[in-house]
Length: 357
Image (cartoon, rainbow, N blue to C red):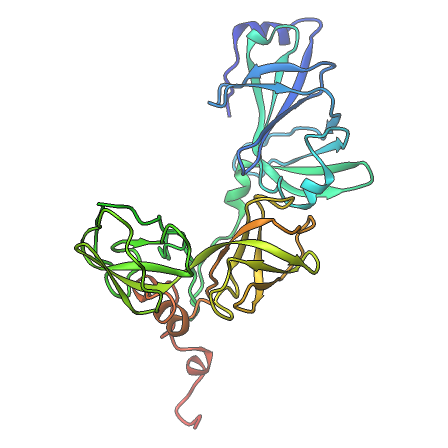
């Protein structure tokens, strides 16, 4: 693969002595950007990738393995060893997974004249991270790594989509009701159609539009009985169980178990769903729900990396066990978008023969 390089930088590389430094740019999945360099002082540089100038810190020392590029589609990986001497990268954040699959770019510059531009050495993302006493090692996976993965879908009676994704199309976090707004009818068994709203004050219910029209000037008094209807000017809303709620931690047992106010959707409604932390030490992290009492007592499958504290807030999202009848039909009214194969014969039929019975 050819790399564009300025004439001035090419001349510098061909010179008798050079003042070259490597820089590493990390862009986490939460859009936080960090820059580091092996130079002896900080430098500000615009890589030209649309993120603007970034300060590359010299405080955090790192060493890299040899960079080797091969022709073809071979996977080109390298390892980076970092010393944890910067407040920007902490062991706690690494253990919490905040750097998992972060985009990373390594490039070369002339530190004495940054106007000469850069040479891209490697672009990819962080893979496995291993922690030791005061440092960590991170694998930089090249872009060809994605082509080395076997990605297939298998025939299974369970749904292959995740609740709320682009294939499932269930709106787990619908918009709040709005005055004098045109709403469309949601068709039966297809959560991708029509309008769904939540009340401005959460009440454990969401509302799907079953008669299209324009909402009134003021918010109606909502019917909280599941299956009941609410008249709203020319719109009719039908009550459904809320698929997400915002809760506040009331008591804490440990990093897995806590009780919360604002989350009361019925026993096991959140089973298999997610807690998405909004505030506190775990803000921005998610965890799967193992059990749900229906009255605010939640247990997670795995402990959170940081302590849960009273008054931490979170959004709880309903769970889906990926079954056609019990979940997609009954719970979410979304059979049209079911992504499993419940009617494909199993191995017992495939291995059957005339005299088997």
